[in-house]
Length: 246
Length: 246
Image (cartoon, rainbow over all chains, first blue to last red; front, side, top):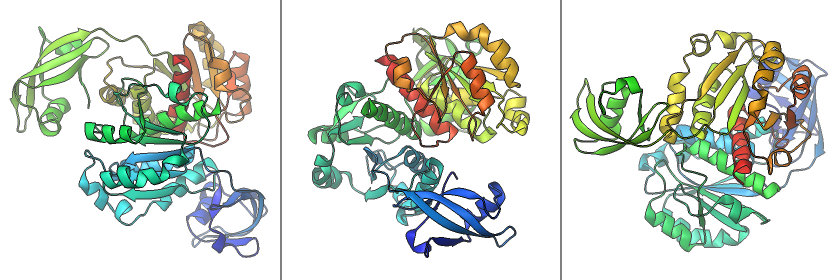
């Protein structure tokens, strides 16, 4: 945890009392004392520092902080993600890692090779994404939560929903090991936001690739190696970020 | 498992009988039958296909394969890694993922912020890396095992060992959140192999950064976000790969 995050409604007149995992982390891992400073951010708002003004170092822990916000909320990340719903353990890992890298919105979609049972996992059915997103923000010292949208059927997503968001992006990339184009060619010298679609284990089926193409996605490959979803998402995000920065 | 891998000494006259986790995978997950084809590779040698010539589909499983090698061993990956020894669970994940991405040699080194106990973990003490490397190769359809070198003391590594391998690389990159240079600047238009050094949780200490600099490493940052070791290694590897391909 490289920053302590809190919701604005937890804060009263620049003060907060932490009593949960954040207090425990400050006591046990960071081993702070009264007077010590720590990075602090308000979820979906600014960040800065906080000073420990009171602390109880044995169970039940509490930590009182006095907050000073010095930076406003950072702009939204230039990359959004369409992700074929992975198995729950992989989803948790991907959510944390891609949040740490920076992402605007994550569209979790159904695909032919997504097992139907994945939609019944508690993390998805109960929309219990927040701890994994917070974990990514706390790692990367960010305050902006990604948005998560669920699309339980592929066809309505690509035919009806996607056209309503298409113009938010300059480039629409479909990651596909058989893709004909290179990321470099498609993103070099382009500014604007990028929508990246990453398939399930085993890849998109031909019908899905065709549907993405009809909607203007360009299928790109980053080589012949078959990667796990988490590795592939990070690898693609990193390459796109580098191209957008250049 | 996207390819079945075997050591050359397991093969007799283009035939092999599998009886371990590979046989179980072919029976249970791939559900192959006699006559079916599968991707097959020889560790540190060529790859091609194999045909199932015999199979026992209940415990104890076995699978007989007839092998046809059509491609020779791919060249060594253009990136080697110096990695401050991570905690065992992270090490296992990084070894698999970076092997899937492609890496030549991985130097596991001590650093000030590496806990001494990590060197006593069974995966390190017993040099039990192979299953994690094979896992990466089986994912990425590769046959070339990375080399792993252990350096239990930092100073002898950087002062005595590194000078003997320095000339194998055109570029020496030290990943450092405070780094002054950009990867782009250092690797653009350069050919040749790259050595990438990634620090422990909490980063390299000043003394270590200074030592790397004295040996010709250039400290590069990929932004202000603090990343976990596994995310950072994949992100850096991907960016360097993109720059080497361009």
